Every structure is written in C-alpha cells, then in structure tokens.
Length: 194
Image (cartoon, rainbow, N blue to C red):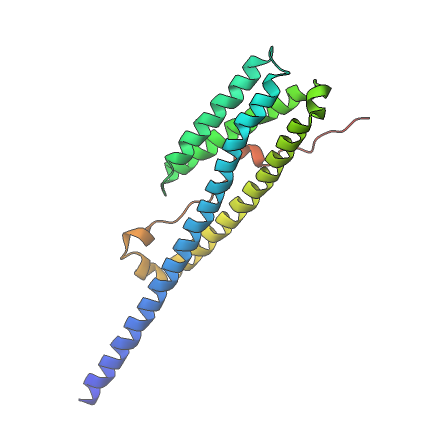
C-alpha cells in the first residue's frame, strides 16, 4: 500500500512537472507568434506608405518611371510573400528575399531622389520619408524582438527533459527560425566626403 501511494505521488509529480513544461513551451510559442505579428503590422504599414511615396515622387520623376516601377513591383512581391508566410523555413526565406529586393528598390529610389532638391524639400515627401524611416526602425526592433523570442523558445525546447515533452506535440516539435532581412545588414561603413 505504501509503495502504491509513493508510486502514485511520483507519477503525479512527474505529470505536474510535464504539464508545467508544456505550458511554458506554449507560452514561449505564443510569444514567438506574437512577435512575428508585430513584424507583420510594421511591414503592412510600410507597404501602405509606399504607394503614397510613389504618388508624390511621380509628380517630379516622370522620366524615372523604371525606378518607380521597381519599387512598386518589389512592394507587391513583398506583400504577397508576407501573406503566404507560415511557420515553414521556406516561406520565411521567401519573405526575407522579397524584403531584401524591396529594400534595394527603395535605396535606388532614395539615390534618385537625391538628384531632385525640389522633391526632397516637398513637405509631403519629407513627411512620408520620415514616416517610412520610423517604420523601418520599428521593423528592425520588431525583428530583433522576434529573433529573441525564437531563441528563447528554441533554447528552452531543446533542453532536457523539455525536448521529450515537445517531441510529443506537433506544434512544438520543430525549431523556429530567426528572421534576417539582407538589406538591413550593415555590410560596409558609408564613405562620407566633403
């Protein structure tokens, strides 16, 4: 009888411990999903700003149609990639590539804008570029928070005995992947000349 009670208490303690691990894994998984949702909000905000930026720029850049077209196409591709994102490695890499293409197109637009002082001085353009810059900063911050959440989830999930619990549930089985947008990596320090 004593052995039965002892075994029952040990089994109950293991069950409670397993439930505790599972609940913490779910908490971390939800944080990862929420962190990605924050990136999604900022990306959508940027996608909404770009058409306004293009409209203002069109007035001054009628003969720079190719540059504007590249930005619009890159924006549409990135928006489509975001809509197709799931937790798979492939869809995240597709989004990263689309975002990198968009960033390169926006950089090309910025270089083109440098040649048009009237456009740069336009209040609408100043306002839109400031808002776009703020959004870029929010995207970078959101991406960092997402990557931190992914790292926390993966580290907790991969430790023992948590790996045994996570292996039993499909939602928790796979490691989450971090997100890095190529164009936002600082590859070299810009050279400034006066």
